[in-house]
Amino acid sequence: LDDFQDMMPNYLSFVRGVVDSDDLPLNVSRETLQQHKLLKVIKKKLVRKTLDMIKKIEEDKYADFWKEYSTNIKLGVIEDTANRTRLAKLLRFTSSNGGLASLADYVERMKDKQEHIFYMAGGSKEEVEKSPFVERLLKKGFEVLYLTEAVDEYAISALPEFEGKKFQNVA
Image (cartoon, rainbow, N blue to C red; front, top):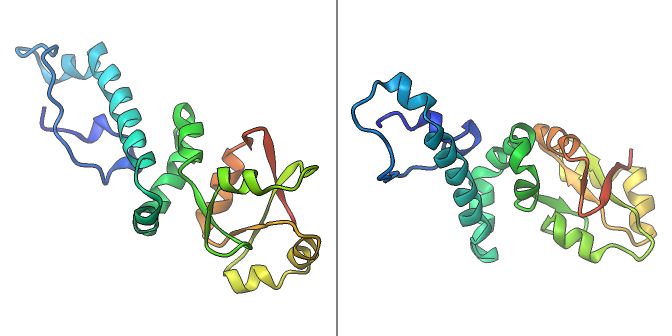
């Protein structure tokens, strides 16, 4: 099967590989093969396996991966409802804490009675930091995620919540 395109969703188009399967019928037309139930299973497993491999990238190497493929992961959050929860764990955003933060790290650092994951969208980190809304929250000791890329807000709006915490635009 030369055409790998249908096997991986668009947002994982950077992944290359070979699929070896004993269970695929050999003497059939491409159309029959595309409808084959087993292909659906393989596709599902490929996506899961890929997301698992990404999840296992060590934190010190993850920044390089993120620099290169962050848009892909964010598009995945928007497009792939079946794997949205898995993909959400791979997201990183610039944080008022300094550096990139995963949503899990953010939730772990939340204040006791804090109900929401606070975020602010803008053109740059500098612009967002200067926002009076952000300044007010920072003074109160809250952490704010800075969404500085166009796709960020779409990704967040595709996520109703993370680990039971809803997202709150502070603007």
